[in-house]
Length: 222
Image (cartoon, rainbow, N blue to C red):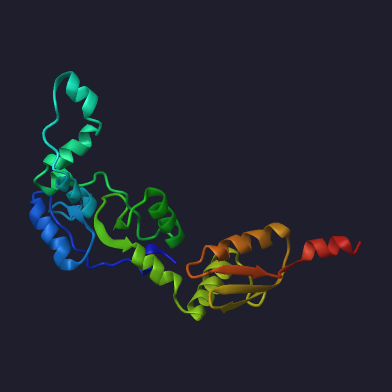
């Protein structure tokens, strides 16, 4: 499964010149925690989130000067800039962490987890034009999709398109997200790759494989 199958294409965006108060109003009105910042051509410039706006709530004063300031001001300059921000361009996170429409859902989930973000703007390769947004909610929706859709993706994408296996070589049964694989492959390496690929399919909770290895059986019979 790829990002373009899950992403939302009707994306709420804002502009760099928008005031923080107006951006906050949009977040509240649309019940979202963040939104992409785009220029007039639709190219992505950054992301403004609740976290960026909340720096204003700290009520930080101007940084102290002299020795006292050196001792007491522990926050980096970029944090101080956010507390002084009045527009989206001054408070947004830039450059943003993004993904592409053709990236796998597994890759996007790993990126989202490692970066500690709740959303990934989806941009076209080359010009960074915003085409959608992927959220953690979208990933959860993929995780709970019906068993028959999970089984279909395993058969079509993993077995046929990636491993080039003939129909019937490996049988797939999915029950409540748990996948049972039966059949026979040529080598132990193929069997290991099969299990790893199936485990990455969105919605798979566990993989139980009894796939036999023909090469090992032939060697054992000599």
